[in-house]
Length: 132
Image (cartoon, rainbow, N blue to C red):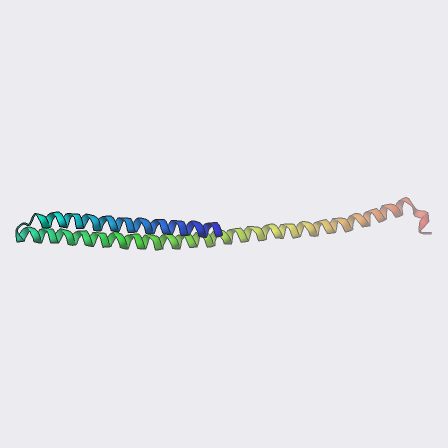
């Protein structure tokens, strides 16, 4: 269980790092483009088109961020459910084997009793004069 928790933490930090990298890259790209566009001032209509495109970039970046977050949540839930189910399966199987062990011990004890009775009967049959 410790190993799965460590793996989960590693995966979580890797996903968060990727998310931060994507956000940083998107912001850097937007800033580079804004600088270039600011340097080459155009008409007001062109500036409106650029602002519209920048809004699209911001909205798309937000959507990607939300999708990453919901994906992480979904994967965590699936991982938790998988872990719980696997532990339950393990517990059920171990209980079945423990029941088999109990049954085998009970059969062995009954066999030992039966064997002792048979040995006693055999001894009595071989030595009938000892009872008299």
